[in-house]
Length: 171
Image (cartoon, rainbow, N blue to C red; front, side, top):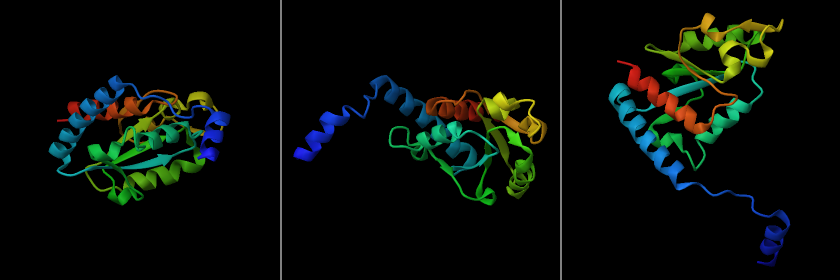
């Protein structure tokens, strides 16, 4: 007990308060997302994430969507290890020349119907690395992208809202 108090005094507050408005908005958005996923897929939405050369900022936010605060999985979105089990391909980072073949291979391995989502400013047009000799170009020029989630990096709530907007627009 003394060790806990000592650590508390030395380190200070290492957690932050979660605003009740965020929880309400998240639950409302998430339940709408869950209902649409069940209606359109009859099961969960499975996403395969591919990093084509990012700084890991977008991956950090994707990981946050699965933390105990956001818990995206409870709304029916699962990240899978193989593109063969995925409904969607989520691409982050500028498309480096080394990742071009791997990205195309992942897309071709996915079963139909399939769709591609890009996340982060780098995935849109290379971001900070645009024009570099090592960047292949925008991902939308390589694969049919149906949704881009802007931001550097986008927040977990932005990611969840963008998925909801996409599914609401899809017929």
